[in-house]
Amino acid sequence: MKKNILFVVNPISGDLDKSDLIEAVSEFAVTNHFDLEVYETTGKSDQKEIQSLYSQYLPERIIVAGGDGTIKMVAESMEKHDVIIGILPAGSANGLSVDLNLPSTIEENLKIAFLHHYIEMDMICINGKKSIHLSDLGLNADLVKNYEESDVRGFWGYALQAFTTLTESNEPFTATITANRKTVEHTARMIVIANSQKYGTGVTINPNGAMNDGKFELVILKNLDLLLIGKIITGNMPIDSEDVVIISTDKALIETDYPVSFQIDGEYCGAQTSLEIHILHKQMKIAIP
Image (cartoon, rainbow, N blue to C red):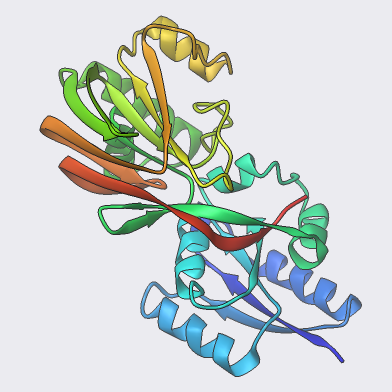
């Protein structure tokens, strides 16, 4: 008996044409005796459409071609169902794929997405919104905002906005953080809420993070001078530095002294003064290498 697979494709993610990818997935499904149903997202009622297709076909797995936003959307659609999600990285930011150490070739990723075992991965709830990867307050959220508003995409778009963001950055903010039954105060340029270790660029920001341990980390960067930025970018995250504080917990409250830019998984979410955060343990099954 053939097994059903639902293939969800974001046709505009990463500014890449997906026709060759859809063909490769279809051929793999035929070769390995899967029945494949393809759904291309439209940005309108996608969750309802995916839920309807799940009820109709009861797929064993859902294969997702897109970035972190598409993966999160599918995971939220399936939060009441027991289904494995396989990932084919195809976004402008593939942070979760980088953290899972997914390979670079479509052939290898097809085998993992369709056939490999899975982990039960945590998600984070922040002010009622879900995060699967990395969210943050401060400088990087400013960068995300500036990038969303710019016309230049890709590496050079990020590089240009990184320079603009650093040169036009606000003063450090004061954050009052309650976690693990303690309340502390830090002056910071950026606070990362991390369910994993790396940004999509491959930069490690949370060296000891794990996606299935029932905890998340608050990575507090007090000072972001060029020396510290250089260390982080080159993969030498200085966790023993006085400029970096890491708090591991399953819930936290962050309050800031003025509204600070905030982003979730690469999506700008406005300026915030208060974040209520808690872990959602074992929320999604993700196929891994």
